[in-house]
Length: 272
Image 1: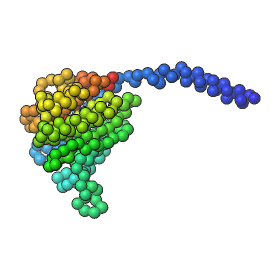
Image 2 (image 1 turned 45 degrees about the vertical axis):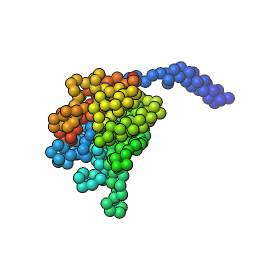
Image 3 (image 1 turned 180 degrees about the horizontal axis):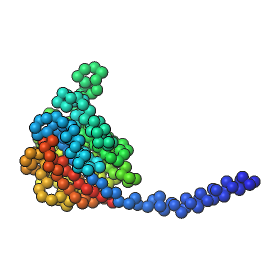
Image 4 (image 1 turned 180 degrees about the vertical axis):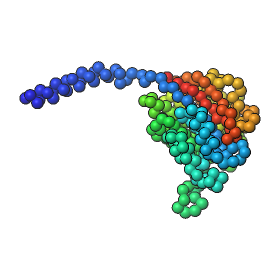
């Protein structure tokens, strides 16, 4: 009887604790501050055409980015990048989690070797819960592009981080790709950041189509023209960090560097 009473008393105490703590379990998670970025790394080759992925890693490291979307990332692609897994190498070098999206996926040059891939990557200091890559519409002769998604746990608060690289040669094709991206965004229900080399300047209709859902962070958080291409003497803004309404952008900066033909964009944000 004594043992039975002890178990009943313990159960009653636990039930009371659960009642007291229940409201806390559903309370809003406090805002999370972090730094996000986008960078087209041109497979680690600088404006001097020298392959040096360590220079790329150094720029990412100095940017202070907690999460960064990278474009033009090779994975065992060819001798232009020494057949390296660039996404994996950068993740190890920087101590970050990684998600990779292969938009071009070819058989290896020799049997038994890894597949030859080219696409985008997301590096994150926070855990990546899951990821997926969706191939975007393209013309018959167009290069295959994709949208890489990663769900990220930012100290207990989930966010959706998207990364893309749109077609460079056709506004109409970019509009089709944007429509596909918007459909994906509409199907998600998380604070969202979209990064990428969008290959279009801010007045382009395809950018207007994207900013119907996500805000361009540069006009509110950046100073100056925000030009990102080409890196030696930039004359246009084609690299973006866009964010949903649950996210506040505080500071945006274009980093001056020539380790790629693009300059990276870095933005401090708060997840509300």
